[in-house]
Length: 346
Image (cartoon, rainbow, N blue to C red; front, side, top):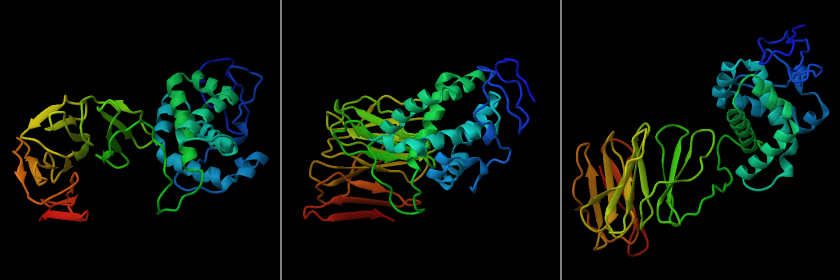
C-alpha cells in the first residue's frame, strides 16, 4: 500500500485496487477509490461497473457515460492541464464523473437560465464536495482554475443532460445583456462565435463563445445610430461596422491581439445600418442605404477604401450581404412593396 505520510501534494499515484489516505485526513479513504480505473473512456461510452450505487442507477449509467464521452472529447485540454500539476488522468476522469453524477442527481432542484443554474449548482457542489476542492488545491492547482474547470463541467453537463438528435434545432437560451439593436455575428474558426449589438449607452457591445462557454458582455465604446454589421476574413480577425452620430460609416477591428480605435470612413451620409461580406483574405465589401434610398457599395481591396458607389434600387431596410465563394456577392433588402429583393455579382 502506498503511503503519503502527510506529504502534500501527492508525489505518486497509489497502486490501483488499494485504498490510499487523504493528505488532509489520513484516516479518510479517497472518495474515488471504488471508482478508480485505468481503462478510461475516449470516444465511445458503455456500461461501467463503477456506476452501480443506487443513486447513480436511478440517473441511468448510460447518461453518465454518454456525457463523460462528450467531456473526454471536449475537455482534453483540462485533462492535460491538470496532469501538469500531477493529477493523473484516471483521477481527473473520476472527479469529472463525480461532477456529472452530482448534476444529474440535482439538476431538477434549480431553475433559470443555464448560467443561473450553473452558478447555483457550483455553489451547492462546492458546499457538498469540499474534499474534491481540497484535493485539487493539494496538487497545487490554483483556486481560480479549480473553480473555472468545475463550472465548465457543470455547465456542459446541464447543456447535454437530455440527449439531442444529431440534427435539429436546440431550445432558445437567454444570453443576457440589454440590446437596443438587432445583433450581428461573425465566426473566425470552428466552434467560435463573436456576437455584437448596440447597448443602452449606444456603444458597441460584444459577447463571444470560445467553444466551451459564453463570455460576459464587454463594452467596445463608440456611439452607434444603427445595428452593427460584422465579418471575419481570416483566423482571429473581425471587422465591425456601424453608422455613427454623423450618419457616416464607422469601423472597428480585432487584429488577433487588440481592438482598434473607431475610425470614421466618411464618404457621405448613409441612412441605414451597414451590411458587410468578405470575398477573400483582407478584402471587405460594405453596403448601406443612401440618401435616395438606393443601395450604396464600397470596398477595401487590401490597401485602401474605395468611395461609395450607387447600385440603384429603392430599399426600405438595411441591406444584408454574403459571399459564398470567389468574387461572388449576394445582397438582400426589403423593397417598397415590402418584398424581399436581391441583387448579385457573379
